Image (cartoon, rainbow over all chains, first blue to last red; front, side, top):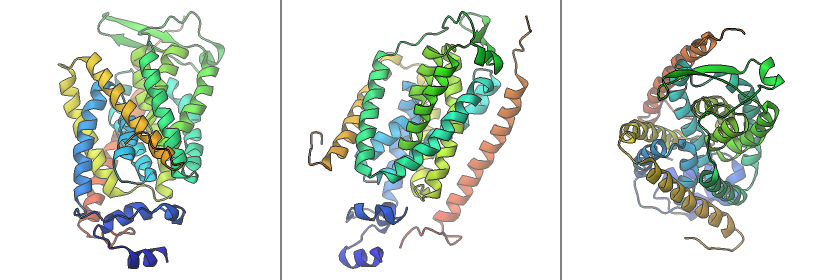
Length: 324
Length: 49
């Protein structure tokens, strides 16, 4: 019905775009933008491929996942509906985690016993987050996404990670679950045995992390690492690796919700995944020669811009424009 | 004190299953994407209206 009415009114030069905005369900019908772009339909996937390729390089160099860069940048500067961007963002984060997961587990850096209790809570909450996120109007999502991204920038600026935290005594829960491990540290040329504490506090944190991951389609590695490292006392390398592996479970459950609601479109997802993956391969090679501090600042600045953009898009609904 | 194994068997088992599933999914994604793009099967969501 809506399709027919709009078809009469609008000259659709790019039919694909119409689909991109309209497909998920009638709940988005109030927000259909009128697209009169003269570009052929395959241009956007091609641009997406190039942008995600660059993003993949920066993500590896900056030590962040693809999702946290993808959602605010593509959501802020591309004309796609935020629901599709979030659905794709989840799959981008998921893809990176799945590609890295087996290697990290085999090298004993990612720990299954540490990941599983967190994954159970985070993935359950990611389902809730995805459902809440898809039922909220998009300006509220953009507004809260903007605030979240700006908070991530703050975390990145302030968090001081500890390579091997000093855990005096493992708590009773982590002992009961046998969350402990040993890994080889080449820089010290010895095996390091680790244990964790504050397990309950960590589990509670993953309630919030899981919810946000599902709601915004972010990988949430930015939150996993500080919780595992600073709060629970897992060594830095184990935290990073376990966090990456954890995403493969957390994001899967949320991704089903987005798939089920029709917010995952192959024409957006596949170029993005291919771009991020190719970019990551190149990024790993550049990593050997790049200066980490410069890249870290670059990621912070990019996220700052993307966060402000998302915030301003959310505020546009209330008639406030402060950022173009 | 209980001896801790450096290589955890459950980690390796899970990693192997995950790896096979990941490659299977990747191949499936590429194949189905080309089926979709080249219109070899009728998609639920049409590429162009």
